[in-house]
Image 1 (cartoon, each protein chain N blue to C red):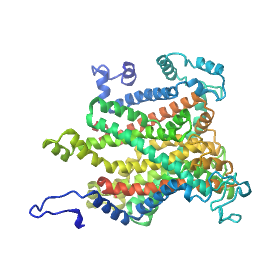
Image 2: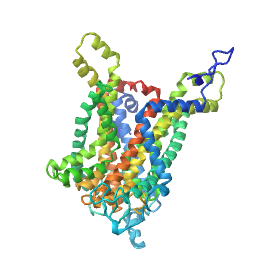
Image 3: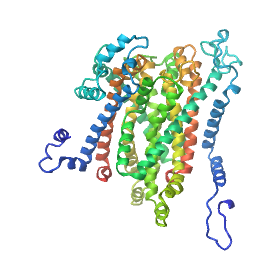
Image 4: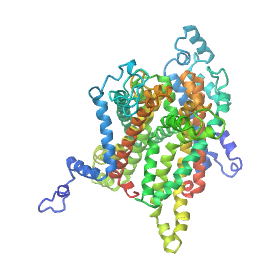
Length: 307
Length: 329
């Protein structure tokens, strides 16, 4: 750990903040020690990899229909075939290829949904936490209002009104999830402003923007990244649910929820059509939860105590 | 606001000159006033959402409808009038219990909801019972024995419950427990046997959260000063665990049980339509698929209202159980 603190001769008590590289390396060491967090990150990176390079990885075209090899079970079943590892659906489309391409919809919705939600939420939360007064009251009222309707019902209604497209789904999740980020940001900004170091900075004459950018923002990173991980997992989860209800991407697009909708019609005869897309959803959500748990423990010292 | 204070605190009026100040001081009255304001906010939001698309009439009819039919709808629902007038009419209707008429069923939406709701209530209550019966003992056992196998099991169930999609789980349960093993019915309502699979599938999300919460609450309470005091005064380990640790740890469950219950009303949309249970969730699914917006609107307002009342009850209960809340401000 010699690289963490640089001691300058003659000024033995000067502490130089570790650089980003040092901090990342330190995080890496912590991650290596926590195996569940490590496994979570690895599975999640695999899903992202599948989403980005779907065209190269998928064994066949996900929309290729081949009725001669339709309704095949998984390879290790009696009548299965290794040319279709996870079997085929009622139209002879390869299930593994469709799952790999389905990762695209999930990761796109999760990533851009969180990006939109975090941008809006952070801005509103900082405004509320910083200006307080009526701005804070008004924003808090809106946040409470949106959070008082069960999230699923809220999203279903909006999706039913605005119609099915990937863009709409990203926007719906981005806007409906913004209050969660706003609430966290507001609370953290209030807490940091009351803290000793922000007051100290103010007392030695630091300007308001300087306090905001040097002291408030960097301290927001940890809690926000942790929340983003959990929210991304939740969005992937909810997107599959919307797909399943026919409210997300059009049925022609391979998505995990859409696959379950088709699978449901053949549930008792060709169960593999439903089993594997569901495993993809659960595994992705699991990986992000494991990684999120680890992040929270590492980045938020206040909860580390309760472990 | 004055009519509100009249109905809430008739006895207090003579003693306190300003009724609004009294509401603001009393924790319970303040929460009731907030809930009523919230309810109006929700109704306005739902009202605005349907109008955000520009032309609610074309939204409400089948895609192949002609201009004449759209004009007819516009007139029936008053979409040709100014928005503010529409809103006041709508608010007046909702307050008097008129949530509009369904296209799909050609019936009062409120009557439809009321006739479907008991089934969903039974399903959600059973699911909540499943979740609590499994999660609380597991969470307490895990939190009391950190690092032991039982704790590992608790953490496993906690994570697994939260990541398993209920609509996928119910499909698996139907295939294996229902069809392959023939243990329980595969769809419909009737006997208690028809409740087991859908209620279990609906319960896993709440179960996961309850296990995690109970476990971490027990871990936290174990280190409190009053627990150390109880131990040092010679109280038996068991008595400390039961009276001091578990009871305080379960307090944190109170605040999430109500929330999870209202989530289950939303989750019933999957479970009921897959398991063919004629409840509120199935009604919402049918309404969304048929683009029956008066019904969608009515169900949303109904569920939001139920949620707001649940939250109010939770807060009042919490205030009664934990005095720090009602005096804290």
